[in-house]
Structures are given as structure tokens and as C-alpha cells.
Length: 160
Image (cartoon, one colour):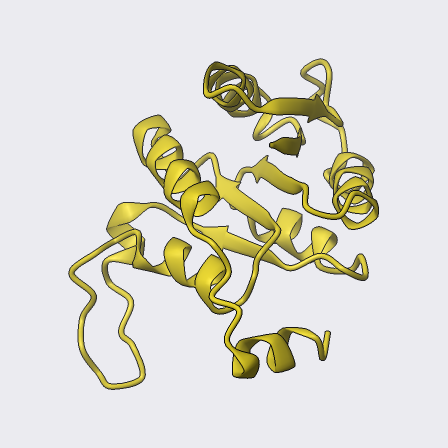
């Protein structure tokens, strides 16, 4: 599977770890930067080309990393054809309440749902709120979860 990856200075070291993990899983990984640590770099300079590569390469995926992951997700989602979801980590995700008011017992349910219902083709991870083990588990679940393909989900995701 082709996976594009990118990060700014806040996610640079995390990106290098995740890149090795993905290659170890047998994925074809294309690094869109940063290629060195520069505390003054700007995340759109790396995230935008990564997102564009995902949009241009049907069936590919992208993973972006930053301090919070928020700016990275926002930058990626500006590219037509990209559906980038943000994962903060198991502790914060477990606190999420669904529409019925129940607490999720599965901190990774949110990651699974981004693929099942939203057909997310990019995942943004927070280097400050996500541990390495949480990131690896989230990535594995995310990559292994197929899009549901139900008509209502196709209809909804086709509107953006």
C-alpha cells in the first residue's frame, strides 16, 4: 500500500519512527518532509504536498504529524479529494461521547469510524498527545479498516 507521510519540526522525530514502522509493515512509504529538524519551519510547506500526493494517487493514504495535529489536518483538508481525520490518542479518544450519550469503551473506535463512515484517506497524529504505541495501534486499525461503502456514506463523502 502506498502511504505518503509528512511532518513539521514538532512531528519530525515522530515521523521518522512512524516511517520505519510503516516500512516494517511492508508499505511503500513516500516521505514529503520535513527532511531535517528546523524549529522555524511551517507545517503547510510539508503537509500540502503530502495531501496533494494523496489526492493525485487514487487508493493511496497519507499520515501527517505535528505538535497538536490540528493544523496539519486543517492544511490537508484544504486539498480537494482529501479527507483527513485527527487522532489525539487513546486517553482523549476514550472520553468521546457518541450521539446516544454513551461513553465509548474502545479508545480506537474513532479511528475505525473515520474509515468505515468517512472514507478518510489521511490521518493526522499529535506528537504531544499520542504515544508511539498509541500511534502504531491507531495506524494499524486505520489501515486495516475498509470503507463501509453503504449508499448513505458514499453520498455524504461525495459532497466534499
